[in-house]
Amino acid sequence: MSTTWSPPHDNLGRTVVMVPHDLNLAIRYSDHLIVMRDGRIVARGIPGDIINAGLLREVFDLEASVFEDPISGRPMIAPIVTRHVLASHNSHMTNATQLPTSYDTM
Image (cartoon, rainbow, N blue to C red):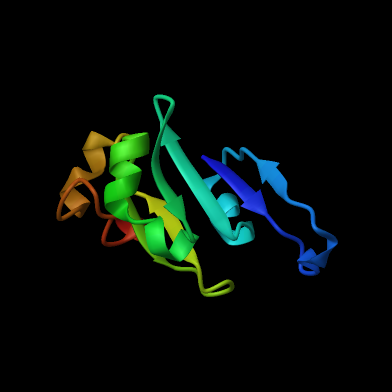
């Protein structure tokens, strides 16, 4: 994901281009994102307009929930990682993508 960032006083006539590996940081600190896969632009625009679960799945093969960051008001990504769930703990779960109903019983 390539992104541009403008400082709070962007009247200096400068643009910063960064290629972060942390999507949440890119979303929080960028005014405009360019999302690419295999050398082609898949989406570009304001983070709140383009970031959604479908885009994350298409571009990064990432299953995630996208919700509003309570600090910035921008999208925030919470990956849904099922490979870290131990099979022995599945009895405490309603499906493989949910957290255990109680950590005390694990």
